[in-house]
Length: 114
Image (cartoon, rainbow, N blue to C red; front, side, top):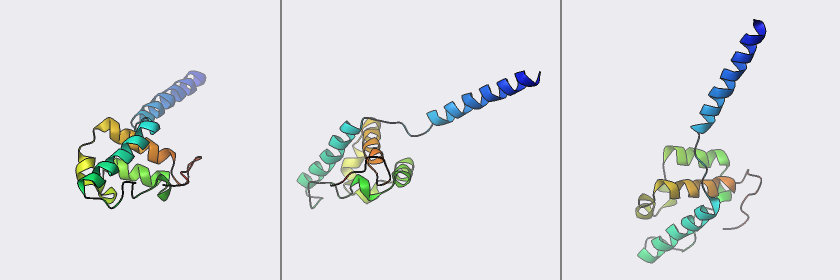
């Protein structure tokens, strides 16, 4: 009886922990994210709202937790180029998040240059 109870509790724990992980931020395509992130700033520069074609924030400027907090709250004001960010769909934002998160300062492969 005790053994069945322990096995059932472990199974429930596994199910609920898997469901919780499913609600975390989705992972996108980091290569597409890098391309889209740069494309946003290029369009912003061509419109005249940015000083440079290159993004103002490098992935290594923040930790993974900081990137997660920004994209969870959907506060993209610090990136500038508000018009371009508003035109991105959810898949593009997820791809950018994945690129920035995977190359954060505390990641196994931080970005070394802008």
